[in-house]
Amino acid sequence: MRKHLLLLGMLLALPTAVFAQWEFQAVFPPDPSLQIRSTHGIAVDPDGKIWVQPYYASDSVRVDIFVGESDSGYRATRVLYVFNPDGSQAEFSPIKFIDLPGGERDTLGGYVGLDSNGDKTWVGREGRGLRADADGNILVVQNNRLYRLNYKTGEGMNRLITDVGPLAAPAVAMETGNIFVAPVVPGGPIVEYAPDFSVIGNAIDESVGFSRSFEVSPDGNRIFWAGYDLGGVIEYARIDEFSSFDSVGVVIPGVASESMTFNPATGYLWVAAGSPNDRPNTLEGFNTNWLMQTWYAFDINDLVPNTVPEPKGSLTWSNDEAIYEGFVDGRPRGLAFSPDGNTAYVAQFSQIAPSVQVFTRAEGVALPVDRLDEVPTKFALKQNYPNPFNPSTKIEFALTQPGHARLAVYDVLGREVAVLVDEPLTAGTYTKTFDARNLPSGMYLYTLDVDGQRLNGTMTLLR
Image 1: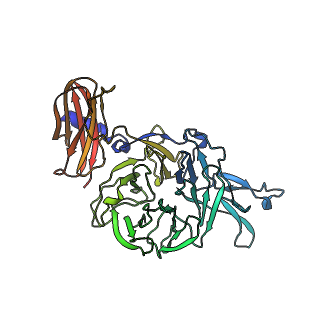
Image 2: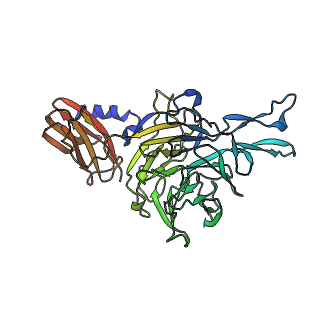
Image 3: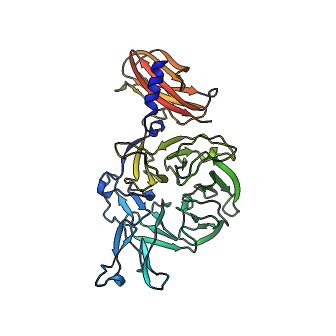
């Protein structure tokens, strides 16, 4: 037992990302001179380019009316950065200006306004969120303005100026192309627009809670509203596009979500759980154990009002000490997936750069059956899937040669709670199911012993 307790203590000291089915790969972009702080929006286009939006000014523009003997005329401004998958900038990055059809040009990150004395001054438009639309073009929110940019050229296609603001990241019904727009501050409407930015009408007359990001189902008939001060995700639903939305209730209790998006490959809704600033697990009446700085995946068809859903996967921001000096006290503010769904780009709102990280789907996380037709090249024990889980999960392992294998599970006190395998096995890849329906929530250690070789993993049971 002492051996297992010592081993568990070592595993507890590892970064939280060890519990996820997604594996941290690197910060993004890799070039330190291009890394930014306080990312507020992130999106991936059909070519795999990564669009990154800082909240604060990170560049400058020359404003002619301010040029004088003692004034260069340059003013700090917000821009958009567009990166190729290898981290190099796209040829039209950074984007400082939006050239619109008809010849109009907007400065993306600011405008000339008047101060309290009536004098001209530079007013910044902070970056508020990004989203790819149904055609892969990029929707950009700068304070109370919504732009659509051509993902191939960066040129402006549409502009919407609202009388409410600042706006949250928009949501898109991928089957219809309709766009849903809502304010960050509670009380304003959630408005549905056609793909050409013409208004359809209010989906919800008065929003509740502060929201940075929300989502809608592909058909546009379900809204998943993430008021991060409400303690959970609320669903609104309608029968069809001609009907009104009604509140269904809380469908993901306990999260304080500031970002959510769909994985295009799986269709799962990924939801950020909370941060040190807005902590999860505060909603009364629900026993939840969501982790801070972690995104969880959900099948929207499994969501039931006032019920804690079982996540289909998770990934956690990496506070790797080789990258950061200490814990990054950031707020999960953005998530986007590559077109094939196998790479995730996550962003945090913090004063520390780099504020974007890359994760990839862990190999072999969803293999349902034993595979004995090919000999593995590496003795391996994979991360269980899903993780966290309730009530069962799958554990995959690989043997490069025949041997007596023992796969066992232990609780945090080092007590053996299950033996999944204890027999001679031929070389091959195996997947075993661990059923924990009679065990309490918490962390568990699983070990694989084969002829004197040992591998270990940890997993989390959430009720």
